[in-house]
Length: 358
Image (cartoon, rainbow, N blue to C red; front, top):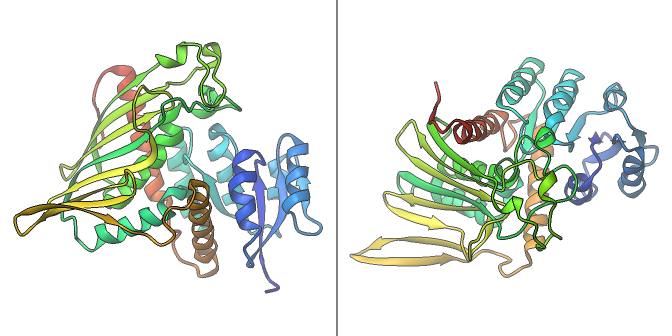
């Protein structure tokens, strides 16, 4: 294929180097043509490892966007610049994949969607957990009606001691929040997608700054309480317009026995499902209760391999949506609702009041 999609990467830190670049470099339909980072050394390192011949290196994303040869931009920057960079890229005529969350605020996310619609360019958000084998299989089960009307769900994203003390994760100004906006966003996106329900009515949320204020050596090397400016845990109850209830559990540091990120529990009128210790379906048949484990292809593989496979599918479907001119698998409209709910949880936690949607 001679006319490959030329991709520019803005933000060449961990998420680009560990997720986007290794996967895109294997895709025959793309060419990694430009790299940008405020630290030029990061961009150069990425270009040296993954760039096509003659790939360009920038420290200012505006210079990358000025190149008319770039077709697609991947935004892998801190949360507070997601909207700024994505909107500029869309207006420059580029299709955009932006890492999760969509933006630091719901207003910024709404503007991203508005500009995407104005420009006619595609915009997607990096919710890669939808593309895991268990997520894909459970989506099919939900779609075929096996669970019936799903009226109660839990979105799980909890760690015992998994605080990302590196980079800007603990910086509220940069990120907008802590585990809720970092890993809770994955679990919430996955839950709403499986339920096919994007119409929230009200939210009640709580957030805590407890374990974060204790100096502790944890699995990621501990943290400095003085620089921990985000919550360490946040929880919420969401009531949807149709009466369904969603519970969100998110934490980087929680005294809990069983931890897991981006896992879902679903309860429907015909049956239930959960992702703990594999994919399980439960229900009643002929007067007896049953629990059935769904065996997936490639079971018992390391978590890193599961993640890599999911990202491969994510990137394939994203590139396909551009080449075939169809909607991305993760739409900006869906991601906006996630951002709106996240913001409502933070608002409720701060005010102590329920937040209602129009």
